[in-house]
Length: 147
Image (cartoon, rainbow, N blue to C red; front, side):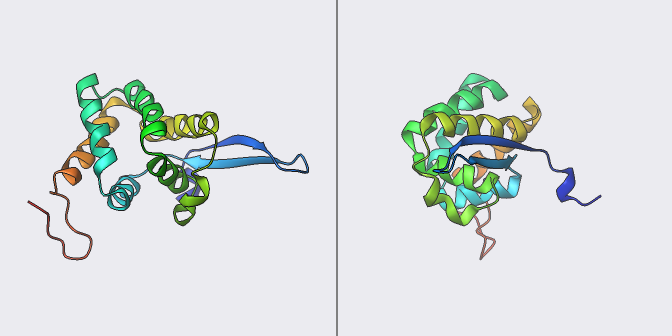
């Protein structure tokens, strides 16, 4: 059994093309490497705000899912980056900015469910976000933090 076959995924239908063929994304949960990459690409600003909100609401997976809806309005680029990474096409995030809010919510809900399988996982992932946002995360090229 390969490592790829052990990764849980979910297929989300987001519409149909002109010929009536379903348009769907197969998404997986985000890894810590994915979260770090999104932080790096985003600059950490939006995800730091997510961390702050999660901390005040108790870090539960439900809280993260609720915050995802807020992200759709505030930072569509971040949502597109998250969806693209979970779909395995991180370089195509700009193509995903114009997905409808409803479909984005469906995709984000699936990604959150696959990523945050317990409150412990939520806390660990958000700790990574907090450290990165504070500048304590090592720079990918130099290994130095921003402290």
